[in-house]
Image (cartoon, rainbow, N blue to C red; front, side, top):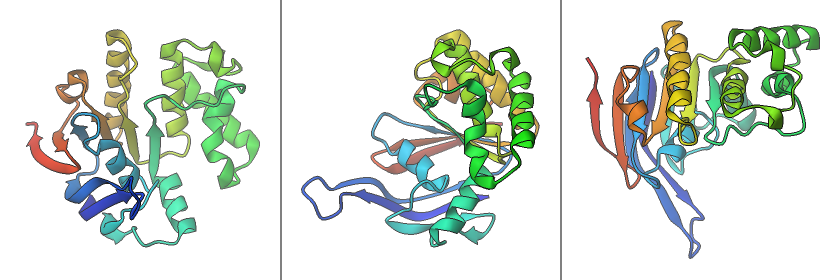
Length: 228
């Protein structure tokens, strides 16, 4: 289980532009299930994903991963938890232009020190899983929207994460590509991967993929609904 306990996140504290993104929020996220964070822009969804995924620290409060408190870990340990546990699919994909699809997929694993040949082989196998082996050497700016999306998901899987975090993954996709994304996520869930998705798209939060929908507004949880 991933547990957030009374977490708040304040940006630019003490300045005229101080902004509180999360307010004393508590939430439990079950592993091997799909949790969808639902809410309008500015509700705190992206900030919560960043905190849960160890990309940022809360201003106050604590976060636990499998009963291990991770909030106060030194940065080098927090980085290792993030790299070994979480895979991220960003709203804009955040692929690195000027390099190939294969190099983009490999990039998150470079700091692990794995032998290049083994890493390259694993990345190619993941691309093959998404029917992208023939596009491995293509620069990402040459890819279609659907291909770029699949490369972004492949990159998220390179370190064999147990948790996939996706922030507004269908925001820039048409209906066909959104359904393709859901199909890929359903396959990952069937293999035991925990999915944490943020979205204000009913394609996501009304999907049978969602086990729990958490509604957020103004940096707080205002409702939760479990799917039978």
